[in-house]
Image (cartoon, rainbow, N blue to C red; front, top):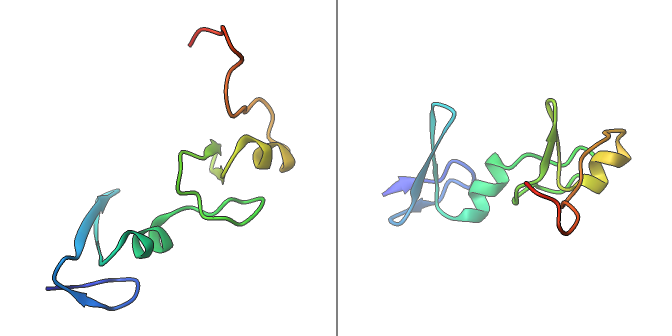
Length: 83
């Protein structure tokens, strides 16, 4: 069994997350999110989707990035635009 690094639960179905050269052990996705997800610098929510990044700053969406002064980020391209 392994101990969750977020809540301390000793659980037989714990799993490891390998990220940026470190190994983390969690008993559930909720604990993994709590420990590892970045926080939107505008609204404070945990970024569990793709989010957007401007330099070293993380936001949950382009709206929050724009509210903090970032320009040029959008949540989607307009119809017909090529990638």
